[in-house]
Amino acid sequence: MPAIVYPTVTELKAYAGISSATDDTILGQFLNAAVAHVERETRVFLPATSTKTFPCRYPFIDKARRLLTLYGYDLISITTLTNANSQVITSGHYMLLPRRGPPYYQIELRVASGYVWDDAGTGNDISIAGSWGFGTDVPYDVFVEIMRIANILYRQRGEEAPLPPLKQELVAAYKRGGL
Image (cartoon, rainbow, N blue to C red):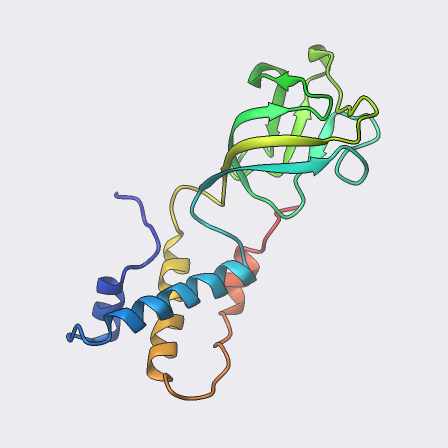
């Protein structure tokens, strides 16, 4: 089965029964608004490569200084993990949690590695370069919800109407943060 990505204008037109190309630009804008609305209320679904930093202190770090919690972020994979003391930590020295991931919400340093989260008094942050997002595919129910929202926005164009609410079961299933 091919990967599911965010809906395209062509897919939205088929969903909404639109055959003309006249409104393609505005349909694209409504799709972008629907994606932003879904991501704001739930999470970012498709991966993006970036570097994020986390303070080397509680509540991000546990008392044993081995567990880093990535509050509010979904991690898919790590390219480079740099401790706050500038040590690069290789993959054999940590575990990504939960084990059923991705997405992952925590990084645990293995006891045998000898590493702990440490800024060596510098005040620097822990740096994680990698792929962030919920997964490599957009879940089908999210795909359909984006199309539903974009179609409502298109049908209401020209009206002063608030964004339509998301289906609550979708919000509950994909609530951000996982912890």
